[in-house]
Length: 351
Image 1 (tube, rainbow, N blue to C red):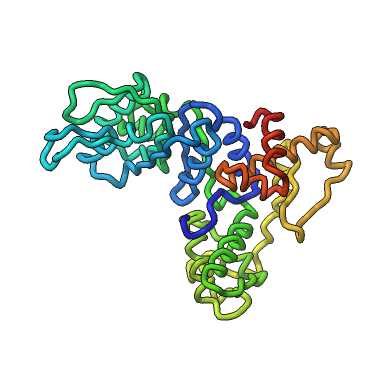
Image 2: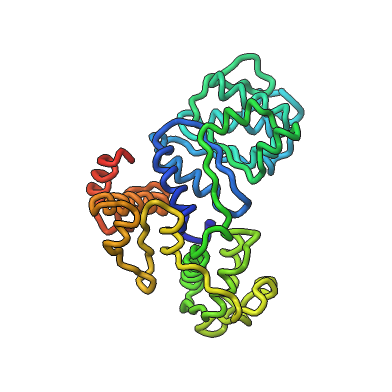
């Protein structure tokens, strides 16, 4: 998502739970396994995890285990000595050494060869690596965060992934929900991306017709946030009016939506949040804003202090996630001073 502002955007109940877990896990050194379909924003989440950790000033080193040929991946991870293999003309550091004192992100770890999985397990257990062609071990201090779009438990059952490595990685599991399960976040993200791409192209941001918005909300988004972003970039360039209508949307969205006028409206985000959670949530958009009432407090067995504490903590975590852990930016999003933000985080033990 380098063409759009960074950070995970959304206010659905499932994503709020991700933000809550992120705030708890980030300050620790525990190994984290992030799961989710392609395009859900796993790398954004991992970067936010690093930025909110005590290692934020140290290296963050990502590597896509599925994008590098199997016979080269070991060298990429652990480095090699000069002459270790053909074309090894010089000694070279691997990603684990580069990430020393910081975080290494093993993306698409489900694609890794089982032989190499054994060596990853050793790194986790012994905190040391051995270069290809080397004859000694080197200690490394890295936090390991892995991600995959595969179901690793099924991969273990099928014999394609080591059970012992799975349990070593799965200390703290975080699942990013697919966009189709995030309710009103589709409209929120569509507005965000369309606004960003319109600014980039020097154009006025068009609005969505009610029918077009409804069709977007009912589409299942197999490519998740990445697919939505790409379509919004296309609309920002190709839409010729100030209104995005049905005729501007891709055929696949229209075919899935069918008779848009017959579709039921997507449930209000705030109502869905309240039904799914034991904590109330205020929607962000002014047009949709619903003031909480005493009946809401009674419904969830909260007093005023508990409600305000819940609301403040949720906004603090969301601002941090949206700003990828950068406190100056998070404070700006909240409209408070950085020192005030830090004080609130410390008070809640989120620092």
